[in-house]
Structure formats: structure tokens, C-alpha cells
Image: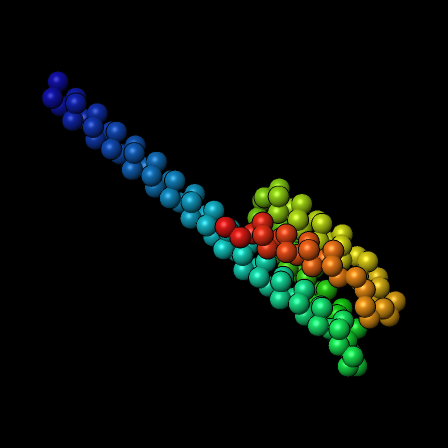
Length: 132
């Protein structure tokens, strides 16, 4: 009987250790995803700032810089979609994508002062969702 109690204890300890290890691995994976999200959201915020600066600049080539900033934002949004599987983040990314369409169209047509408020607010929401 003593042996079977010791055997049960070893089994319980082994199962507990395996479960703790699996939990730690899953937590690390979630932490890695959160860090990736924060880093990409930070890059996204920088690109939105670059877009704002390019559009407020009176120097030659501001349309090209604005297009580049929007291309960077598109790339960062694609990275966010690949790195995370969060429905709230997906919604925020979709909203930002939608709010950037009129900005891109306006810049393409030569408008140097499109309304950036919706895009800035949507970008802030992406950053908020990514912040742990």
C-alpha cells in the first residue's frame, strides 16, 4: 500500500509538472504574440506620424513621401494580421484600412490636406488593442 501511495504521488507530480510546462510554453507563445503586436503597432504609429508630416510639409516630393508612408502602413497592417489571431485586433486593422482609402485617393488626386483624423483615431485603436 505504501508503494502505491508513493507511486500515485510520483504520477501526480509528473502530471502537474507536464501541465505547468505546457502552460508556460503556451504563455510564452502568447507573450511573443503580444510583443510582436506591440512592436508592429509602434511601427504603425511611426508610419502614421510620417504620413501626417509628409502631408503637412510644403516641400517638393511630399506626395511621394505620403505614398511611401501609406505603403509602409499597409505592410505593417499585413504583418499584424499574420502575427495575431485576435478578433478585436482584426476589427481595428480593418477599420484603419478603410479609413486610409480616402486618404490615399485624396493624395493620388493631389490633395495635400486630406482629413487624417479618422485614420489617426483608427491607428490609436490598433495601438490600444495591442497594448497588454
